[in-house]
Every structure is written in C-alpha cells, then in structure tokens.
Image (tube, rainbow, N blue to C red):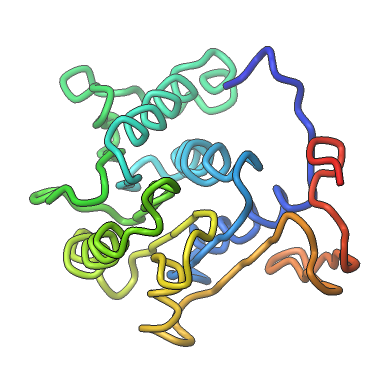
Length: 235
C-alpha cells in the first residue's frame, strides 16, 4: 500500500486485528474503535480487513462509508489495488474481480462478494452488505456543528442499519477519532448502552491501563503518561 513508507509496528495494531477477527467470526457484531489519527485505523479496518476476509470468504459483502464520497472512494481504490497486487494473488489466488462490476466505488468478485463505497448522508438504496464499516463519519473541521453531528447520527440510525443483509447477524464497525461528546461514538453509546463493544485507545494513557486481547488472551499494560507509538509521536 505504501512501499516507500517504513513500517513502524505497534501492539495496538494486533489488538485491532483481534477485534476485527472477532467481528468476522461473529463473536461480536457491534464494535466501536476510537484511536488517534495517523495510527493506521483506516489502513487496518477499512482497507486490509475486507481484503483479508475475501482470502477465505469470497462471498462476503462489505459496505464502507466515510464523511465524504471522495475519502470512501480512495479507500475503495486502495482495496482494489491490494486485491489485484501480485503479492495478494500469490498468497490467495481464489477469485477474480468481475469485469462488468469493477468500478472505483463498487466492485464484485466472481464468487458473489461485493465491496461498495458510500458516504454519510447517501441513500444507498438497493445496496446491502454483511458487514458495514463506518470510518470517520464526521469531518473533524465540522465536528462542532450540531447540524453535521445530528445528520451523521440520523444517517446511522435511519439508513445505515437498514443496509444489513441479515439485521440480526450482520456486523457494524465504527472507527473514528473522538471529536465531541455527542459524535457518533457518544451517540451510540448513549442510545444503546451495553450493545457496543467499545475499544478506546488514547494517544497518551490518562491512567494505568490493562488491555486483554479478545482472542489470544495476551495482556498489555500501559502506565499513565505512556505514549502510543512513541517513536512517531514524541512526548
């Protein structure tokens, strides 16, 4: 995806991957991931995760949405580039993209799986998915606008939920940085207490934290004041 950029690994990448694995296994169906910007949240959850699922479950349908269609389309292009890369094809040569449904914002494979890019506020009528991914539903520059936040929250309630092919068994992943007490994270946690698994990883630990990974059981301890990825984000 970024061949000129060196990989700087972090424990929280593995934590996010385990939670997304739990989503795919349907051990979880409602997940909120709050992580700081520029810590690979979109790369892992919105780009790599759907491609990883297609390695073994090519029939799975995804719909992803961000605050703008341009951003969602950019993520879609990166997914398609990864799926068509020589590395991916050597690892998992199990399907081909359908020639008649191979567009930048919507493509399908020859096993029936589909990936659709949309935006917050779009109707998305006629389009359904098994897993919905909402990545940054509110623009950070507009987060203080009551109208913008209310519109995003209403879209999640009234439009997004209706796109699940299986309302009872389908999964929704919301991944974003926190922007306001009543941004989509705050709204969903307030409206549906106990429904959502909430993973909140601050850039600087505000207190001592103990993270137990949901699948491997690995435990990571963070002390108050510890910085996430300190070689990239210096104190």
